[in-house]
Length: 212
Image 1 (cartoon, rainbow, N blue to C red):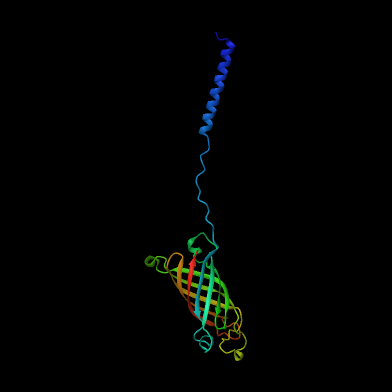
Image 2: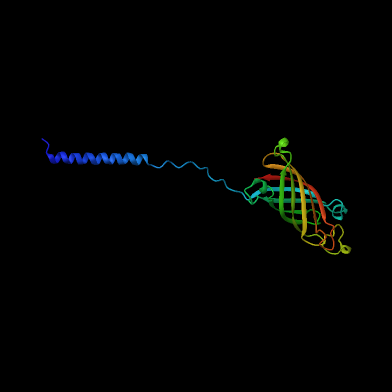
């Protein structure tokens, strides 16, 4: 026959076990849900595009038509990603891509390096998608050309007046793929009449670009 003490002990143990089971069940219900999957952040490239090409040195000037000199230029430039100025797409469209580049004349005439901004716009996207585009550039260029008085201009050089010069450029382009594009280009450099001489340079050429 079971003693009262044994029955009391059994009841206490059973109660403790029941309480533990209830607590475990309660903890199971309140367990935090698993964290939702978040895709890893893709690395951000501050370089937007690189380009390489060539041009003809100012065909209508001494640098472009004097016999005995090469008129060919080799060009290269880097376009950086647009800085985020506005979250409104309309205003952000007016922000240029910072651009640095240079042009080397293979005939020993004026070579230069430039810095500025490039604006791009797609032409007729309803018809061509994003394949055809137009660009404009504005900035400054430092060069190794002649800056002295016109009377002393060396043979085969233009009288550029000073350095640096203003540089404006335009391009009509076609995207072969989302990464590769080709462009026809024209550029002009001058000092806007701020120096004694202002013959300037106007070059025509083309480039191939790779977008990251």
